[in-house]
Length: 119
Image 1: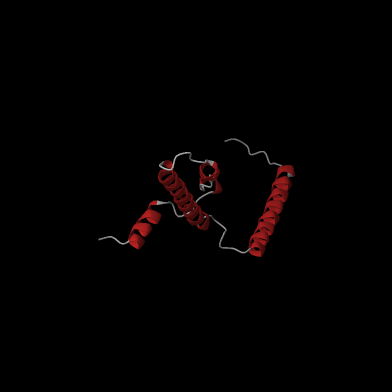
Image 2 (image 1 turned 60 degrees about the horizontal axis):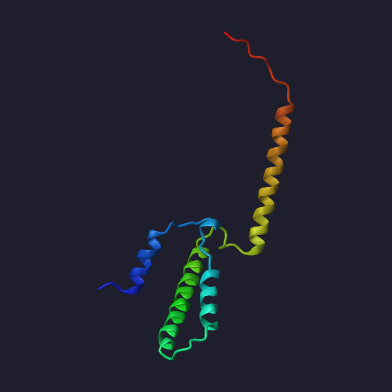
């Protein structure tokens, strides 16, 4: 018999270790809209109330699962393990590297080229 923890580990092993921001599923609005629309409906018959309540409960559970999945996906985004200050320091270092490399490219581009005689 497989426990829910083992099942969750298997589920996370199926997913890639790192994601890009575009891969994170944060499309919650349709589910939230369905929940609000379901709450605003006023069932006219008492026989509709139990199924109506179950539909809303099902949508709330679906939203909860989707939120948990989004949390798991966000934890796998590159860079979230760093603090804001660390991210800003890394960004500044990368900008400095980019400036130095651009300066070198400009320097080499303006240097004299030597004609190599063909043999």
